[in-house]
Image (cartoon, rainbow, N blue to C red; front, side, top):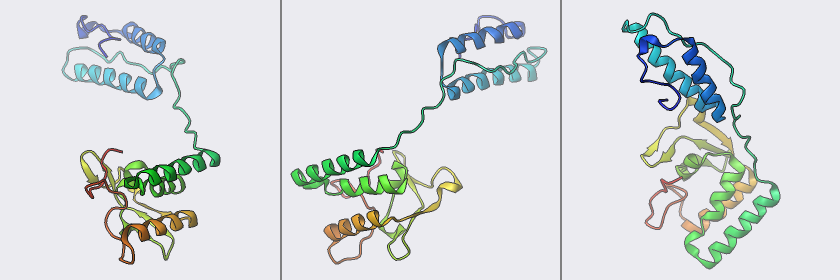
Length: 197
């Protein structure tokens, strides 16, 4: 914020023109809408506190639509041909190094379930119901460990598509044989879940 506001000036002397200069500077940078909004919120919070503490008579902040902001980039999903190419590369990798036999199954689950990477890595066999054709998303994983997903709506059930059920069934038989699969779907060489999404 200090790059866009002259804080050498006493807070009591800030006026609408200073806010206009702030807007001009951040608009010229072409920031993302989210980043520009955060900067505006922080500056407004500074002014609100200064007014509350009696250091300035009124908050000079005002709303202004900025024209040069970058919109959030649209997500471009993989095409079916790209998916086939990636899965083929996974097959080749697992044939040359069997430590990666799980990679194709992870990619199939990612492509055809819509799970976020943290949700995929936290997925347990107990949360996949082959009988009802449902995947139950109950947790996510990151460097701090396993947690509940960010929002209540993230706790959800996802359809287990036939292509995913077939792939995970083959994966389970390869990994567990006739035993019932349990624990995390995807683990590292030490049998621990991945935490680096």
